[in-house]
Image (tube, helix red, strand yellow):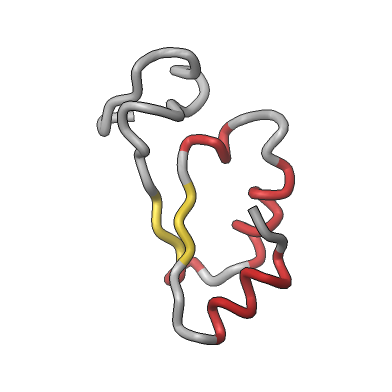
Length: 66
């Protein structure tokens, strides 16, 4: 929920950042901005099953295949 500056601070300390299906939502502009600002090797993709299904499965029960 923090911004790009906070993400950079965590990465400098060796952390990885996790993102879930929320990044596919239209109003996830801040999350997408953060995602674009960090190195790909510091990104973890989460399913958050059975919640937070990505678009176009939004509103349905999430499955790790999404």
